[in-house]
Amino acid sequence: TLTTLTPPPPANARYMLDEQGEYVELKEEDWKETWKARLDKAQSMSKDEIFEAARGAGNLELKEGEESDAARKRRAMSACRDKDIRATIGNGSMNLKGCNVRVMAGETDFILPPVAVVESSPPAVVESSVPAVVESSAPAAVE
Image (cartoon, rainbow, N blue to C red; front, top):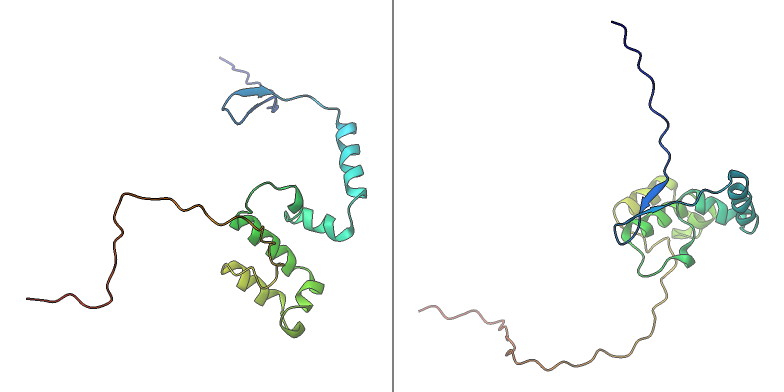
């Protein structure tokens, strides 16, 4: 017997999980409109912003909440690739390899600008019925 196998149809991402875990149908957009929107966005960006976005380090101002360690490391690695930024670190003696080694070790503050600290009110004092434990620096007596 001869069996003919036909390839399955291509998989199209028509459904996606939302935040509540429900499947929602994706709106089908015309590819020409999608690419025109991307081109319009790229035309409003500087050359440096385009390179940062391509390296995965762009749109910092659009992010909500605290920046993750991975995102901060990604931005630092992108900054290491920019020789003008590296020239401002360590009297201009920072090379690409040394910069990358420091970032991969988790050090990002040397190359990224400091994060602005938002002023907040002092924390509220909460009364507790649990007695506080006081630790003594003197060794316990042994009998």
